[in-house]
Image 1 (tube, one colour):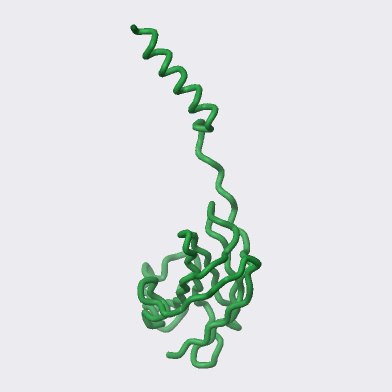
Image 2: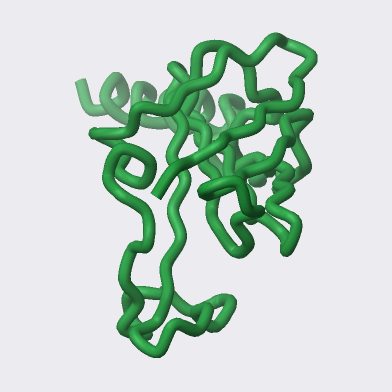
Length: 146
C-alpha cells in the first residue's frame, strides 16, 4: 500500500518537471507597439502626459508624450505585443504644486503631484476616450479641452 502513494508522488513530480515547473517563465521585454499619435489640450501640444490604452483582453499599453504632444505606445512587461481591438483610453498629466513637471522614475503622487486633467480623460472608470485599433496599429490623435 505504501508503494502506490510514493509512485503517485514521483509521477506527479515528473509531470511537473516536464510541464516546466522548474522555474518562473521568462518575461518578454517591453517593446514599441504600432500605435502612436498626438495629444493636444485646448489646441496646444500636451507634453509629459501619460497615454494608456486598455485592451479588452486586459493588456495595457502606455507611452508618454514629448514636447510636441507626440506619443508611441509600449507593451507592458510580459504582456501582449500587439495592441488591437476596441480600447478604453486614458490620458493623465501630473504637475507639482509649484507647476513643475514631476521627476521621472518617481511616482508623481509621492512628489505631491496633482492630476491636471479631468476624470473624463484621466480616470480609467470615467474616461470618455476610446480607440478602435486595427491589427496593424495606427495613429490616434486626441484633442482635449480644459
